[in-house]
Image (cartoon, rainbow, N blue to C red; front, side, top):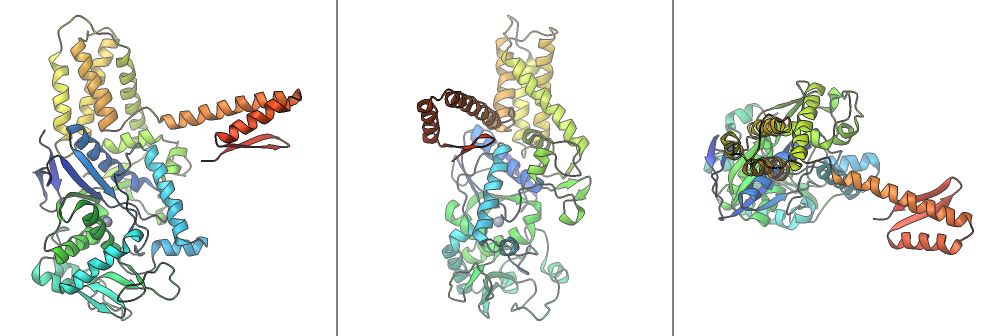
Length: 490
Ligand code: ZN
């Protein structure tokens, strides 16, 4: 198998990737907290770890890709203060918390499908793993790295730091952390402000609650990933991914929990994608630059000059290395749109080309190796894309009659523009699904017109038969004064 080098956030250098189990990659990625629309910030990790998975599969590995759904325990300030994000949303919208979770999980899946990301192999939910999380808390208490206080349980950072080193992943030391943490305001059960919740006792009005040895309550946010990654990937696994914003406190706390419970960190390579900024600014609701993916795809946000297709967004994200920041602007997106069109046009042109009886071009044959080299160098998608544009140049030269391409040239260019671009980078023609929807609309309208005609000539046997057959196919029709409405019952 080809050597693959991956930057490890823990060692802060690129390392040769060697999986714990030969041929199998265990990948855990922190998924969304499902309390709002999927936004641009979700697209970057989704696409980064999707390309990583696709590349490993292309290289011949099996990948077990686990991405969780956070549906409980993520409190407002991203640590463990304030209200649970989902419970708050549920209260605002007068919904059951699990209705909020289901609504936004479905929307997230839909956005991810549009971006052509492969679904994870396993998508566990935090609320479905309360038993595992309680077991982990028990282990941490038993090992002396946690304490109970008024029905809540906290991780004892000082105790941990006496045996291990808290802050190794994010490059902080406890002194810095102490100085940058707000002092206790007397309202808390914690011994130290930087201790974090493993189990929180629920207030009487709190809906999401489970029984535990300490109180009716709910798990702390960091706990779920330690519990679920171990459950599905084992106590030691290959890659843990997530956005840079999760490095501290979330991943630092996960690492501490793993080490404190099992004596080892459990993760071989920590991988973090950088953030997206918008016109140079951090995305924030208060700055009115918080763009949902749906707004991006439809162009319905004041920042947007036009709509951008999911493939344009995907391509745009791949144009930057995952560890660099990526600045979103209309100009950058429009440039991506043009670049993407060129690539896809070349892929189409190539399909129609016939080989010439000529020698293979060496420049073409080296392109494949260059592309793999870039991708295997810490997933360097911008460099890989620059080589794919070189492939485009060759296709265009042949199209304009300036160069002749041999069968071997065409085979390599096809591998680049179909396998690498399509299968590995996941950049394809705009999705077929939307075309299918249009096709379905058209076909049903046609059938309904037939039925209308049958009715007009009082051929009710035919019009009823059409209605019944459509119903069998899951299409409900309803005659109204304005015509016939139809709905697809999935
Ligand atoms: Zn996580």
